[in-house]
Image (spheres, rainbow, N blue to C red):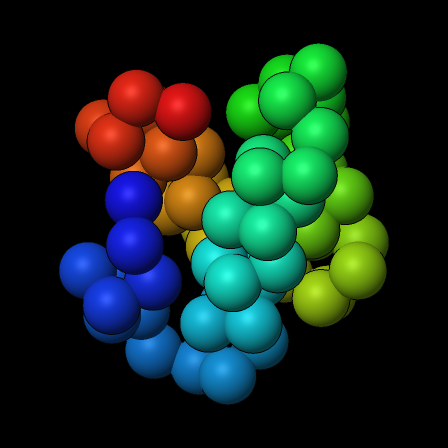
Length: 62
C-alpha cells in the first residue's frame, strides 16, 4: 500500500497512514491490529478512521 493510493480526508489520518507504512517496514513482527491501535492513540483517530485503516491494510495484504 502506498500513501499515494490512499486519499483519506484529514491531516491526522494521512500522517497515520505514513507512520503505519514506516512502522511495517521497520518492525515486521507487529500485527496489523497492534499498529492501527498504536496509530489511533498516537494520532487521536476516531473508531471510524481506524476501521478505514484496517480495511485498507487488509485490502493491500498487510
